[in-house]
Amino acid sequence: MANIGGFIKVFQDILRNDAGVSSGGTQQVEQLAWMLFLKIYDTREDEWELEDDYVSLIPDNLRWRNWAIDDGEGNALTGAELLDFVNDQLFTGLRSLPITPESTIQQRIVRIVMTDVNNFMKDGTLLRKALNLINDQLDFNDNKTTHQFNDIYETILKQLQAAGNSGEYYTPRALTDFIAQMIDAQLGERVADLAAGTGGFLVSGLNHLEKQVNTANDREALDHSVYGIEKMGLPYLLGITNLLLHGDNNPEFYHDNSLTKNVREFEEKDKFDVITMNPPFGGSELKTVQLNFPAELRSSETADLFMALIQYRLKKNGRAAVILPDGFLFGDSGSKNALKKRLIENFNLHTIVRLPKSVFAPYTAINTNILFFDNTGKTEQTWFYRLDMPDGYKNFSKTKPMKLEHFQPVIDWWNNRQEIIIDDNPKAKAYTSEEIAAGNYSLDLVGFPQEVEEVLDPMELITKYEAERKALNEQIDDKLANIQRIIREAHQG
Image (cartoon, rainbow, N blue to C red; front, side, top):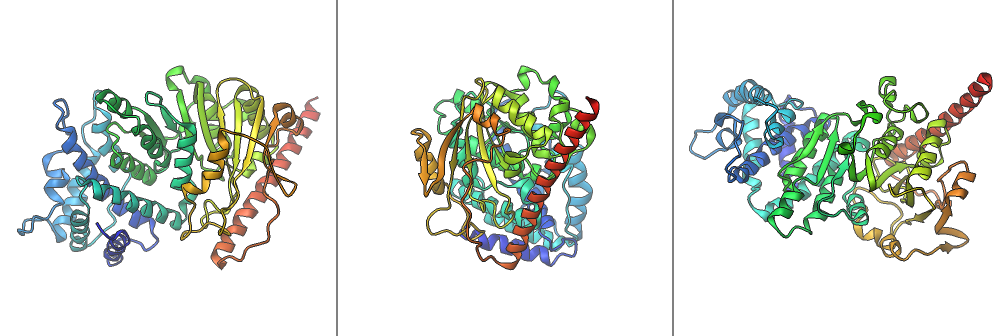
């Protein structure tokens, strides 16, 4: 496949002519996603069937190779016949595949994935064109094409952002790769993302670990290295496909909500050596979910609950890296302060990297940070490093996204930490746990100097101001919650 953009455009053009697919973007992504999943799964089954003990649960007539491929001899299903087959046999059959407690993860995947996706197309002739395009352009037995498909996948995921779902699904690859490099997972360790979205952190973890594979036993260890959970159907489908594409033969990626289990019930087997994630922020959770946490850690803010969950699911001596918005750093509500106090007193919060404000631009202007900590004991000091915008950039954008090379300054500093002061403003500085406690556990330190307002595209400007208003509302809510807590404690006293 020589032209990735051309493939996406032709596929979208086909869908635009179908009355069943909306032009909003998300339905187009889902339509492409389930087709790609079944094609990639079919390719992987070719490999798995080389093993004596692998048995496919998919009936022959429902396997991609037997219905989706046009051999050019006029035998391929098309038109109403194809549409009826997909709607009445394919989806129905795959959603009811026989699964038993003995079924492997490989065998379970198809039924789980197909349960929550839909065929939106209503024109069987256009559906045949879409299938032929995929089969003609994408050969997943070809390593070169597979590598190119990684780029296609990045395009698909970015389109999800453009459809307005950025916070839940996609973290820029440069960010996940940087975190994987700094965390430095080792083969034999288990790497988890408890709100995995489309699996970006897990793929970066796999890519990092794969460099350590030298033997068949190493390969087996790699296949059991990553673990993900995602509650939303479409990103779950994209995440499973992502892992299959990147060679995970045992994708332990589950369609579930990590927050629905009581944190006090987690045992050692439920914990992980490494947790890397970008929890969804800005969302809210029901009271029933909040009851799964100790009273002092309960919050309606999703990111806060995930931060608490991570603390309960990180093994002794385990390592974590978590992306969180500025609101977590400066928030002083009862639950946020309790979370930060617990983090400082029970974990080693050794580094906070403050990210440039447009890392996720233009989809959100919320300022974000990476918190690196481990479960080795209490915090003695926390280093803060402000990652400035690279030379020649006023802000990141769709056409000028952040790249891994932009993290080079912090990578160079990481193992030779020194305080850096520029124009009387700290760029890198360490604070003791006592200093942080004295500041009421505010982690809003080593921030960015006040900048001149950049001129943005009107739509980007609207998005930016909406995000800033949301962040301000969160600050106000934190203050009100804190005041209410003080009043309530005074009355109780």
